[in-house]
Image 1 (cartoon, helix red, strand yellow):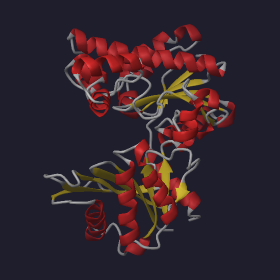
Image 2 (cartoon, rainbow, N blue to C red; image 1 turned 180 degrees about the horizontal axis):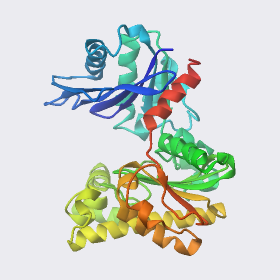
Image 3 (spheres, rainbow, N blue to C red; image 1 turned 180 degrees about the vertical axis):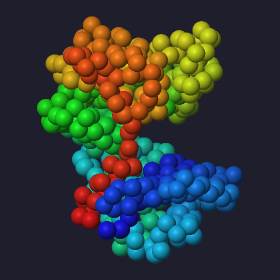
Length: 393
């Protein structure tokens, strides 16, 4: 049946996975790192675990794509480029233009670039990646999978800000959310684990990584989500502040003589766990750290999660399961347990023994009114499946 590439382009890198169809086995994966920056490298990991890293200049996305195609042939992952029958690309911002993943032709590619102001670090790089594949693999279907499209089911009550309506009408200022591809995969997997129809479940999915968000899933759709116009809003994150009073932002700008772009940079890159702790943006560096600021950072992180989870359970009128995913959610047992303990009064009974190890499983007791689970997210597989669906492979 062929192979499908799933591409996750960042501002200076792209990660990839190559899936063999129909088995959906990963036959190669890796990263092109530091694109356009000194010290760039290209990595390929084969299905047998063998890994090859090449230190090589990668001035642009097209060079990175050529290195990928060359390595796939060099290490005999493919014999010919014709084996690649579809390519899926993670795109951060789809705005209101993309309510689902979409085949990317020249018209849709222009729309991705037009949405640059909604994700200035990501959309241009992702667009350039698509252009590179279009040039080097002409005729192969390209599919865009948008972080925001899953959240296009939100009601205006949940996505509108309490600002003059004209700013929405003129500029599209509203909540767009993020992590939609991850939440979509996780929610469907939870439904399978619970032997329930997703449309009948009320879930709260906690995507907890360096970037973190909480999403309520009701009737099989995104019901509400914590990230906003950009991924800066919501809970405390690795380097992002999450929710903050806009007046405090203006106050700090005046006191520090900062421009708006400089202040946004502080809120995106110098805040969150890093800003509170003064130690690290990585939760692993804060775990079991006796420093009072490190402990406070973890406490604030949990507090903001509980605040959103509790609010979403109330909004949905109940909850069947709370789900932990992504780097922190899948691996930090202490964070999971603290969140679950805060929800005991709602009928969530943690299984502390199950929680002591990681992996996709239930971490609540069998008689718990609200179930708790950990699920390893797999955005790349979701991307590959969207390619199969939309390209009719």
